[in-house]
Amino acid sequence: MIDYLAVFITFFAVVDPIGTIPVFIAVTDKYEPKIKRRVALISSIVSACILLFFIVAGEVLLRALSIPLPAFQISGGIVLFLFALNMIFGESKPEEEIKLLSQSHRETAIFPLAVPSIASPGAMLAAVLLTKNSVFTIWEQMQTALVVLSVLLLTYVLMLLSGFIVRFIGSSGASVISRVMGLILTAIATTNILSGFNEYNILFQP
Image 1: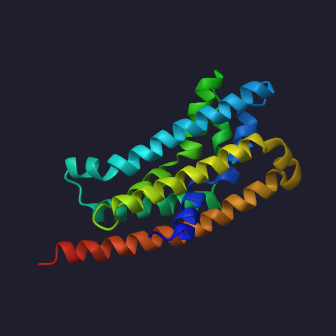
Image 2: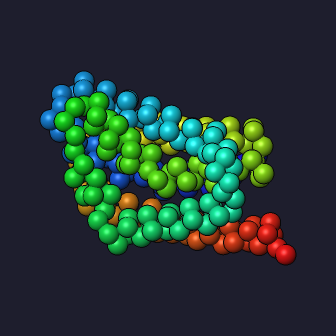
């Protein structure tokens, strides 16, 4: 049995549903409500497919490339840490990704909404690290997949309610929440790095 709360918090931090709201509003500003709902649905489905792929085949892909999982865990933790620092000190997620506007609503749903806003690099890495075959059973991996889908469902609902939410918390409120999630993510990333070094030492100890 996985720790549902810990896994949910991890994916909530890396997916950042709150930070996605201003991005969604900006990239769909010129669309009518029906198209906005379609963009939200397409981006959620594409994000789910990407993250489920990394849950199912991420570790297999690493083995095919002869990359030990502890090494990926260390490098992934470093990337997560840098990603979190960017959320805290750099441009906030909405400000950075609003620059990536596309013309077609289908293109907009895939880029920048699905990737890199929802299925972010941090989310892809977390999907692999939290479903390691040597640690988690298939049932536990399925539980993690359900948690991922629940976070994406929450993201989808928030996109549908984006107009009301932004009027309530404002764009500055979304930016603050995004930075708090970044702070939580730094702790998660540090834990992954330390755990990766520990596993590497155990596996490759002379």
